[in-house]
Image (cartoon, rainbow over all chains, first blue to last red; front, side, top):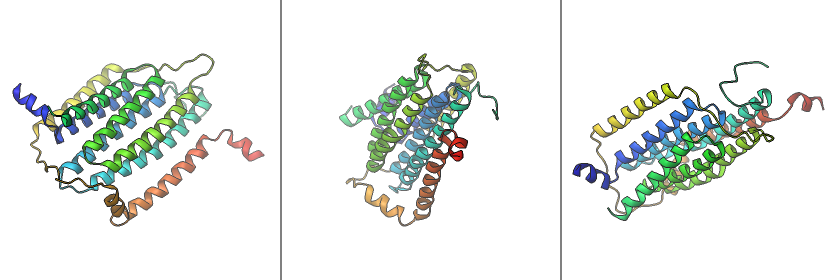
Amino acid sequence: MAATLEWLKHPGLQHFLIVGGILFALGLYAVLTRKNGIMVLMGVELILNAANINFIAFSRYSARALDGQMFALFVIVLAAAEVAIALAIVLNIFQNFNTINIDEIDKLKE
Amino acid sequence: MDLYTIIFYVFVVMTLFAAGVVVFTRHIVRAAFALLFAFFGVAGLYVFLLADFLAVAQLLIYIGGILVLILFGVMLTSRQLNVDVKTGTIHIFPAVIAVAAIAGTLIGIILSYDWTEVKAPATVETTAQQLGEMLLSEYVLPFEITSVVLMVALVGAVMIARRDNKQIRMK
């Protein structure tokens, strides 16, 4: 118990990795269970943020190289591109099917 | 318990609680606004990891860009007449098992491994200049490719989302 308290008092690499792990699990849960396409996208964003926390944590607690931060920067840029494309697809699906519940969309063609 | 640790836990709790709201609420607009706080908390964690430029980039791109796009998506795809912004869930049971297994494995591995850590540097310099120099030296090819990817993605998004392609072409 005392060891746990002592561990909690000094935030280090493990703390950030655990936050990233929990965030990843929450995002995965949203991706797996949500019906709404936009909620699935939000889960993907949470997963990308979890990966970024890991990248930057390793960048900070390794030999002070900035490569991890560089990867995180590319992840942020690609997340922006991803969400733009995905929302365009979601809007198109909504026009064609009048719903974005991904369990009701089971046709490849109108 | 010093101030550094307290603020760290404030950001951690804020991030995880907001992420929990995003995942478990049934109200999609509430989920979108909770996502704002989750992104903000992650930006705070970036500051703790000495990544000042990325924290600002997170605020600008995620909260200023991606979140606004998501809100646009929510507004454009919820039926306006019968305000139906609730969102259901499917196969919760297998998802809970899979997610619990993955989270347990991850946290177990993280806790059991003996990480060697580098101590914090005595003087903390800003990272923007170093990142800029790296972007134009070792990372110049990924940087250029990313710009092309962004342009293709944005043009593609406009092409996909445009209404009634045929009618526009007829005119």
